[in-house]
Length: 433
Ligand code: NAP
Image (cartoon, rainbow, N blue to C red; front, side):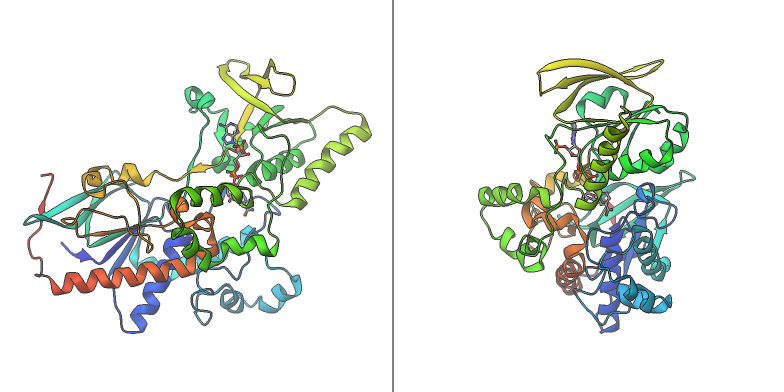
């Protein structure tokens, strides 16, 4: 069986950027055999949040390549040039293209790597391969839509699978009810609820805000309750000094800071990214509620400091028990549909790596995003987008993506060199056989 230098799980922005870096290294005389596995049938970037008028919150200059190599073929500017839109884009006078256009840019970049990416395959597990007393390779098992299981061997792995929807505890029992869905599935699911007259949107972040405005414009007959634990919606702070926390050298600073102090820094800047919609969007929402007052109608409700204590599926809707922290009272409210715009968690990689856990200690990573492992475990496993605690708030964003792939690629070259200097591996036996 062929042995890859690297298998990437997921083919979203982080791994596309890595594929670009490896391609450019290959052209510079440092070839690697890499392969990527993506669960979606074709490239799509948050397809169910591709709302009209949604735009990027990060500058287009923080694209897949510019921060690492401004002369790359894969910059957003070159994409515009190839699409004959560069001058028109300049006339827009913006750093923040629409999400639709940025998705097209990512798809354009991804399209260069169709020969080394399997779409429509979901990785189900990663197994250790033993050679003598060492784990020298990984066996990556994935399942395609026809339920056929594929196996590939690799010397290293990079996991870039994005976030998984966070479902609040009070919804755990009814998470499979078709009337309850996460913002991650919004556009696909909302089609099934065209007749819904009362909809709850839970959360106060960019997703909740965009969805609230989208629902508001869909039908005059829909009532929306925007429900949040916070006292108000706070805007993301993208002022220049604060924005320096997303500079690439800030990653060094965060990584080298003692753990307790690092936690304090994350807390101090949490609202630059989380539960932090754009100010313009907040103003639009405020205006909707103001116009309700002008017209003296009570259509939507802005339920601040409300906690959903219980959510029960009933035949006539999803009944919430809401704790109003303002007056410390509980009340009930029933909805035809519920959108959980409650963010994401990023530890799903641990279940993929479960068979390897005895070798991976606590899954802590080094500066090059490589998981620390036992001495007998030779494969390198890298994480992209799951290292916020050690590398800072930029880790889940595009801000450091291009530069991070260079750091990972350099570590990967070391792994390849070490592996080339070791005995060639001809026979492979499964450690779990
Ligand atoms: P988010 O920023 O993490 O916000 C999640 C919201 O859900 C918060 O208001 C949080 O409230 C609330 N929440 C979490 N757990 C809850 C619970 N158990 N009960 C009640 N409320 C709960 O998520 P997001 O809005 O999906 O944004 C995620 C990331 O995607 C951000 O980086 C955002 O900028 C990005 N994004 C970008 C765009 C765009 O580029 N146009 C669009 C959407 C999202 P608390 O604060 O009370 O915990």
